[in-house]
Length: 465
Ligand code: SF4
Image (cartoon, rainbow, N blue to C red):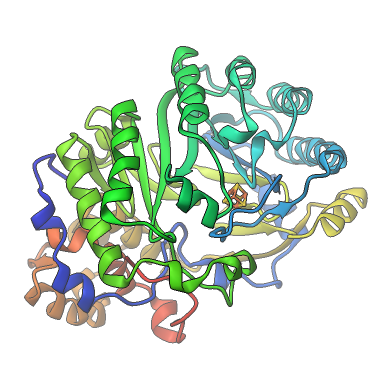
């Protein structure tokens, strides 16, 4: 996206209202509801053995599920507990899983990307963090610091200056921090009390230790938020000037996420106020020089995400946007999802099951999905749309041996209405997503989602804005 696209072009209220319907976020295609238990541990072991000798780099994801307290807006997979000792066996089993993985895969493939997510990764103490990183480094060939993206999600309530120093020392060089909102009233209503001072102190420390591409997560649509109140949070964050800002929409789905039942619906901003908050936030972020990357993400023009997007080298995976080529992704820890050998694999979601599988010497995988040729094609199309805001039919034809316009005749017919509304520009040889369509990129991608066409997925996904 060019840095000069303004809010008026990006944020068309009438169109946002018109296209406001449930849809997936496409961190994977096909999406997780398609995963099934016909694929399991033995398939995973076979896949790993098959791809072990490949030269392409690997991306590792490690999940730490524990959180000291629960944030009421949370829709993540986590275990809320004050019992720190619960992390002890978890770390032991993570080490076992790392060994099993390295034994099966062999250690020859370079690792260019590592991401620790949660839950709260820094729920683990310094010794536990060191033990895991030592084991990873002893079993895998990580590329040097300057070439690798080694990131961790940080909760400033579980992190101090010393933690930041240790994280850098053990090899992390990227950091993502959850903030959401600094207003005390909002924080109280969502049970996440984190002062501006402690947050900024951790961020300053991260900068001092050379963390790059520092990302901050914000959330709009939380209880008691107004345009004015959220403007204060945005102002503080913009003053700190992080490389990236993710601005997530709070989707109130209490029937799906238990903690959300503690949020009083009457305290939530109205749909109209929420859209005003979004519009104002976009305005403020663009005015501060941030570029809209897509799907809630903003970055400084010189950040590697923005640079990769300009070069057509942006990718999308379970952690959101990524600059690393469509690397194979290996998941570690409960609930984690990997993509190996053209197949998605997901780990068991409960601790007991996870421990039992590893005790039996098996991978703790319980379901997955093997992509068909058609899935690979559609995955590519959706990925390029989400990352480039454009499609070149000829290059897809060449890569997949199809005739795009004939193959996607249904989808292109659906897009005709969106073209009339000014969301996309359709040409004989390709399409371009216009500024007004960028906020609605999910809707455009959904046109190419074959499984969505087949199944009535309505209600399973959060609204697009
Ligand atoms: S939002 Fe993050 S810190 Fe809060 S409960 Fe969920 S996983 Fe834990």
